[in-house]
Length: 449
Image 1 (cartoon, rainbow, N blue to C red):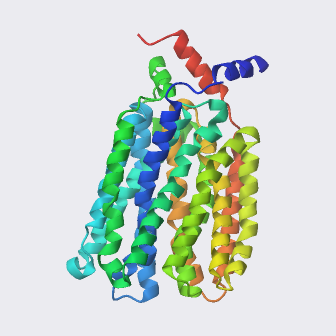
Image 2: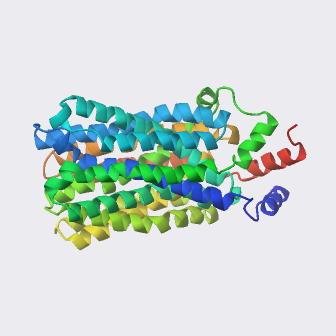
Image 3: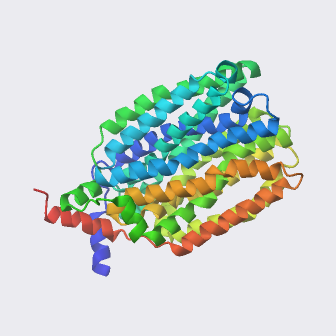
């Protein structure tokens, strides 16, 4: 075993050519796509209940709006199946180009969509369909973005290299909330609800063009080239994952639950709770999310790198347990209606999320063999998203609407999610970087004809 480890270190001491470029491409592309997804998240809490579901009770309108938010999560497994299969059969690069286009087009069309006062019931129906397209695109995006950076990078440092895609959500969230905060501060509430929010959606067209320019210049990953050279591409990757990797699929899926629900709490529901229950302004909430997301830009790669030095499952599991313990503290912190405490509480909450989300990509992808990574990772990520983030805003709202005890019911919900994720850690396997090294060595020894 020592010989193999020494070989792995010798081969992977320096990242192969293209690793830095792939890291940047994974980071920028995912950031752009999550910008699109994030502006929908914020709009579903602050804008859509008023312009796409008018005439309803305020609580009912919020539930309906969050239901359209959930559609994006329900659609992710569709994207995971479609693009996960393609990613293991035809490669990572071209799948990622298509997912970027799909999400970008859907987002621009949402920005141009007339509201209920113009189209009537057709407006929310079209909104749901466009949200469906967004979700399908994101479902296929994540697995490929992770593999793009991790398969170019050092397999013994997969926690760090795969964190590129994980920085995308807070980076996208930072951009989205930044744009929305500027618009909300510079426009009257009437102007923001009338047309201001649309600027953030339409602006994504420029961002998508930038992302396409980067991704179209990339080569295919060395690992996929090695699989292709060996003639080992799976014929039916989705079926093979379900039949040969059930434990890996369960472990990887469960790992997603707590960080997904936690992220929904601090980036979606906190906007409702702070404005409705605590009487804070939209600007206060967006500022808190903005600052918390800024810290995540550094904490996520740090957490990923940390799990390359220490046991990945232990670091992940400890962060999940700390999250459960922190929830009552957070709600008690903000009962005084202090904006400063809201900011501090949100920063801490998103920091805990970072220590699960940073190593999450590495943990999920290393549960599956290289030839099934895209399909397996995409399925685990998207199926868990339905159970976790998809239902979370609606569940938060229902628990909150249940009375004054809503906050501790929400804390109990997070506790349950943390337990589920810890079970995933116990079921999962530790990293095996030698697998990629052996694959690459075999390719060099027997090049494709």
